[in-house]
Amino acid sequence: MGMDFKEVKKEVVKFTADRNWDQFHTPENLAKSISIEAAELLECFQWSPEYDKQAAKEELADIMNYCILMADKMGIDVEEAIMEKIRKNAEKYPVDKSYGNSKKYTEL
Image 1 (cartoon, rainbow, N blue to C red):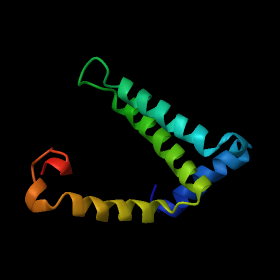
Image 2 (cartoon, one colour; image 1 turned 30 degrees about the vertical axis):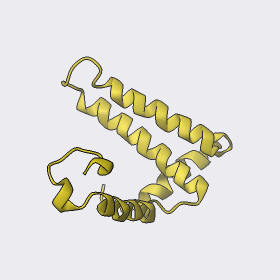
Image 3 (cartoon, rainbow, N blue to C red; image 1 turned 90 degrees about the vertical axis):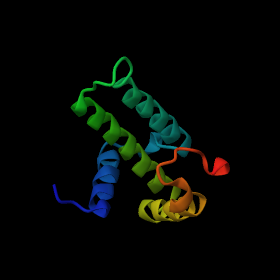
Image 4 (cartoon, helix red, strand yellow; image 1 turned 90 degrees about the horizontal axis):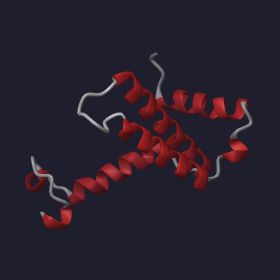
């Protein structure tokens, strides 16, 4: 599609506004929705490592849409938040200690 993230965010917010759903989108309700959709994504892998890629893609999109809406509702810049978290994780998980290692940072 060739859209940048700002355009995607605008479309997600517009979709909700066009349907007057914003009234239901409290941070609490959006957090619940993210968790519910994450469970639906997990369901795609419930009985086997085999999965329907389209179904997983749709559930992942639902999760991302709700995350975008929650960030918008809370006044959080998603790109900034992600970059800030990457910097924090880089401090907790330095390459020389964590490369190829799945241990939590407290165990490194």
